[in-house]
Image 1 (tube, rainbow, N blue to C red):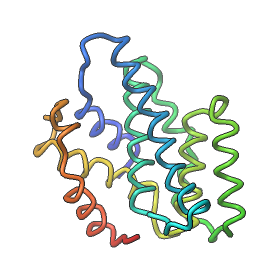
Image 2: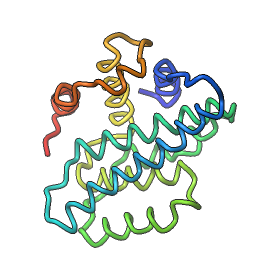
Image 3: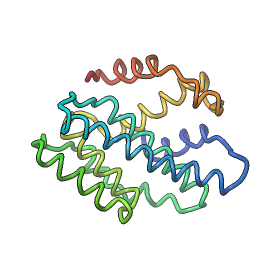
Image 4: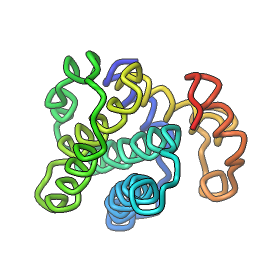
Length: 184
């Protein structure tokens, strides 16, 4: 999946909250929430010894991208963020990071979150994911996110507030695990 294909598919699932202010709040608060959920998974591993859940990390990154895409659309910003992401780097994969490096990347994400562009956040998330599973590509994350939203909506383009709240988490997870041969 290309970045442009992702942008177009993700926009079919935006839910109109009635006015621009509410829509922007939904997108921006969603970006914060998804970044927090991504870091919570890493915290549970480092602080409590919980096994890292790669499926969850991929899902949270995809959701972050979805909210970011919606925000850019609502603000009528140039889609240049697609060109700014170093997709060559993201497609190549990276070496496995030792746990200290994962902590360092996570700390940088937390320390600099208010100063990072959404692209920087996405790149840091991808670095962590690829350090755990180098075979996962940026395209995989985009496909996972759209497939999950399509499943939630039952058919493309019909995602509603009801669908967003009343989802089958087990079915979504099974789809993500099977499609990309991921397990925790």
